[in-house]
Image (cartoon, rainbow, N blue to C red; front, side, top):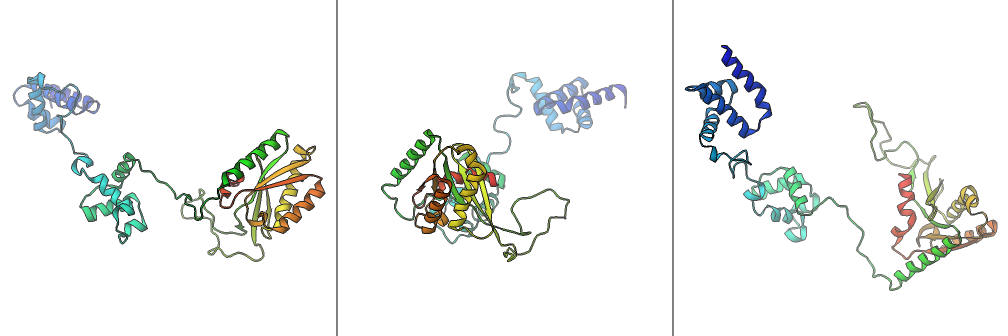
Length: 332
C-alpha cells in the first residue's frame, strides 16, 4: 500500500464514525472523484461501502442543486410506520381489549389477559398483522390508554339521600373540635397478619439461587395465632398510633387501643382538654350497633374523665375514613 492510499484509508477511518448517512456518501464520493478513473472501486474497497452508494454521492456532487439540505434520505424513504401499513390497527386493538366493543365473550384473550404480548399474538393470529408488543404499547399510549387497576365505584344499593349531609355534619364537628384544640381521631382495625415464617410480598437482594425459605403453606400456627393491628390516627396532628393484639378484633380490644393511645401519647398533648372526637366506619368491632363498644367507651370516659363523642361514617364509605390513607402507608 502506497502512502497516498494509506492517507485515504486514514481519513476514511477517522471521519466515517462522525458522519451521518448523507455526509458519508458525499465524503466518499469526493475522495473517489479526487482519485479520478477507478476511484469509486478503490474507495468502495477501502471503506466497505457499496459502489452504488458512492455513485449516488458522485451524481449529487455533480448536481449540487439536487442535494437535500435538511434530510439525509430522499423523502419517502425508509420503512413505513405501522399506521401507514395498517390504517385500521388502532381499531383492531380496541376491538381486542374492549369486550363490549368486540362482542365475542368466547374469545380467550378478552377474559384471561390483556397484556401487550397477548394482543400482539391475537393480531398475528386473527388479523395476520405481525407487530411487536412494544409497538402495541406505543399505540395504546398514543390513544390515551394506560395500565389501570379496577376501582370500586358501582354502588350495589342506591345512595342514601342524606349521605352527603352526614359527611358535612362530621366535617363541621371536626372543625369545632379543632377550634377548641381538642383531638379528632380516626380509628380502624387494619389487615390481620399471620405470625410466623410465612411468605410475604416484596423482594430483597440475596445471592442468586439462595432465596429466604419460608413455610410452604399459609396455615395459622396455633401457638402464635394472628397479629391484629388497630390504628388510631390524630387527624390534625398527622400522627399515628398502632396497637397490635393477638386475640381478635373485639370491641374491648378497640377501646383498649384508644386507652393505650391516651396513656402513651394523647394525654401529653391534650391533657388539659376534657373531650375528644372519634370518627370510624360503621362496622366491625367499633360498629354503631355493637353494644359492647358503647359500654366499653363509657367505662373509658369515666376512667379518663373525658367526654368521648363518636361519629360513624355512612355504610359503604369506609374508604373516606382518614386512617385509610395515612396509617396504611405508615404500616407499609
